[in-house]
Length: 348
Image (cartoon, rainbow, N blue to C red):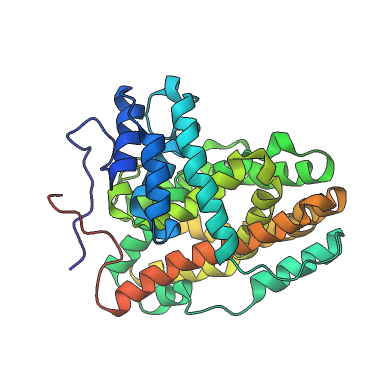
């Protein structure tokens, strides 16, 4: 049986439960202002961690620190966004996280720094055959409970869709900036609040009987799901990683159209209507256009203008594919064992 999903606000002040000493200390500081030695705790936890990319305590701590920058969790105090101790802790965790990603992500041979060559390389990278397909499983085999779990995992990013990539806008100029603004304008509804993609997804979540308040299901999702958003947040929030966030967005858009068509087919197979499927239908057409803009006019043009960023553009694209694939593999592996892909939290 799948676990009971968290749908009510927690009884304590913290918006979600800590998963270890680092996340506990970070939450306490950001919620009630009580500063503890979380930087020292983070240093020790990084050294002790077997795999930081799947470490629940460190990934939740990093998610919480990034949530403070986004303003996505109201319980986190706005006046502590730039607290020096919290920033120091964030640097400790994200530096270790970045080093780990650069070791674990396989980066292909770099193309020539021209728009056409980079676009071809990215299309080749994103078009390569991977492992078992989550979208095909949702289309053909998933149960209602599994489809709802899929939506729960997606709430961590998609209720804030496009925000991590928007950090790059003020850091770009010329062709890449115009291309990114064109993509993001569509993501934010082209001036129509009801067409903002995050709002469309919130409608899908409600239609599936789930809670659309951001952060509701943080307790339910594993570290790999948090790591997916943390990857793009790290790329977006650090100016030195401009190439990586651009490459990430390019890969994200290039691998969206066909999976979203399959997700929509699967949800309709399970009896869901337009209120749930519209979000996925919207991305079938929109992302078929976005992938061309992202590949050539954004990533390709940036590499042409800034050849020094080429390696990070390709790294960001490869990291997007690898980290998101881990989330899909986690779900499929759990379901193949007849288990839930969500965390079992005692006393919930």
